[in-house]
Amino acid sequence: MKQRSDLPFGSEFSPSQIKLRRVLELARTYGDMGNWKAFESAVREKYFENHNTNDYNKSKLANNTRLGMIAYGIIERNAKLTEFGEELYTVREEEVKLYKKLAQHILLHLHGMSLVSCIKEMGAAGEKVDLTSIRERLALKGVRFPRGGKHPSMMRLWLAKAGVFAQDGWRIDDAKLRDVLGRDANEFEALARFTPGQRAFLMALANMGTTEPQPANKIAKLASATYGVKFPEKSLPKLVLNSLVDAGYVKVTKTTTGRGAKPFLVAPTEKLTADVILPFFEQLQGRIESHLLDLLRRPLSDIVSKLSSADRFVAGLALEALAFKLMRLLDMDYVATRLRAQATGGAEVDLIFESARLVFSRWQIQCKNTSRVAIDDVAKEVGLTHLLKSTVIVIVSTGEIGQEARRYANKVMADSNLCLVMIDRRDVDCIIEDPSEVIGVFNREARHAMILKKIDI
Image: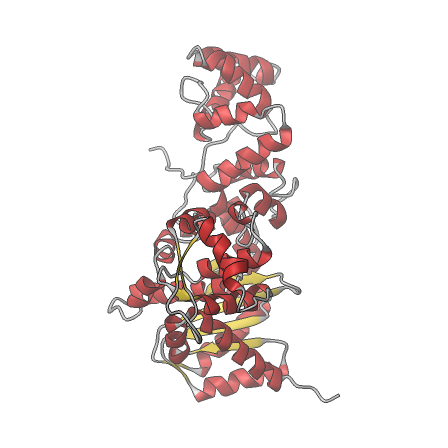
């Protein structure tokens, strides 16, 4: 029985075998006639006729090229260009655009982001990257390809043509990856026309993960702390809100008038969801297990409602989603979910985030849906930091954090460069009530660490 594959078949459809521009032109010539046999004959003559093998194998190689182009969504079975194939054909003479467009298609529609995510996770865990280990890691995400298949290698070669991977290995260029995707968590094309302050305000609102109206001054507070933008309180409507309303991204309600008026209430519109929030989740497609991604797409209130579920899996997943939302409020960059590897001794880390703002930091997040966090829970996370090269540990709990656990965390911070952020049920409730309070919680923890790490000068 033929093995299932979620990755596209690519044998003989690779930049090391054929020229993309040329096979697109052949597809235009013969595919328009619906003559796939003539297409295969032309491919054979162009690329495989001089191979040291028999006629059957030469024809088989050409047939594999056609099958690969079908699997990549470039041609139909009769060799006629698909809609995507037509897009490639249009830019065939502009090599940079051609490879970038194909790479974007691979990343967003052919589980390419699953592959990229796996490579990042394996790098963070110190695992060896080869086809066997990639297959195992992809399988954890529900993505499969046949044993012995080189599907990931073919994808890597095409992604390398766009600069996403190094030409000679599995090293990922994050800047090229963002460029190919055409959007970044902080830099969506739809927001390019706004001022830095307006963009920061919109991103802060989007990161709150709620559709309920929020006080404008709370959003500005979060945006200021996250993106370093200052907002003059009295001129906030004129400098920020009016333009965002005119663009259709926010709805604003004036609560009172006159002296001592309350701040405006601001809510996201469907347009903001379509242009900013949903595109962000598109980037996560394939990088996060589908059930967690489905939960992340929901409003914060939906996630919170599941924290008390009698189903431990549902409650644990909700806590993971909440922790993800907390890190997004701080504009951290997602790296991995449920990282488990030989390099961690089989231990599981719920979330890994990174930031390159001013200095590099790696944040290791552990979610505890238990009544109490014990010293052993904290010690396990500290032990993993050496392997994961983390600089910050965040423990998010729906219960209490025990005094022994806190004393141990204080000792670790006093004696090392690690920072430990302890978020208990009271903090979670506070942030749920007002997402902007995440800044106060993390500032409190930062000041606490600074006191512990005080040096005599």
